[in-house]
Image 1 (spheres, rainbow, N blue to C red):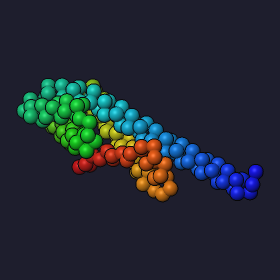
Image 2 (image 1 turned 90 degrees about the vertical axis):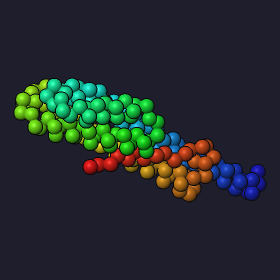
Image 3 (image 1 turned 135 degrees about the horizontal axis):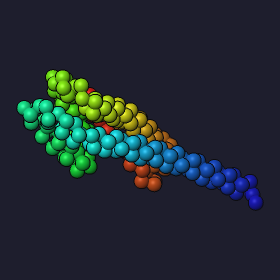
Length: 175
């Protein structure tokens, strides 16, 4: 074997190892994004399951808030059907605002505020909102890392070769 052949062999081996390492890092980051989205999905489902209970609890005391009650229910139904992250973020922001408004309405009713079931429900919704925010931050950080990797040289070569595509952030307006 000539020295040129040996150099080419070592070079080819080095490039192959480099490509494998980059590919594995891209797969790891993609899987982090998918796992992070799963956490968000769990929290959204948890909150969506609590909303009818909140609506029912407030409905008993605050019949005049019918528009808010119907609005949050309609938003919840639409959010379950949306695939686009931008639109989903807007809907989920609106749901958060309506849920806060329902809880504010409950503050006007001493009997409702004193109801242990309502207080437990209010705590569960607050927990779901907090977990959703933490999950959203983790997801967006994972997406940012993944997108940076596939846009950075030399990782972009392997990313494009194997079809890795940027992911969208999940943004909700905090009001």
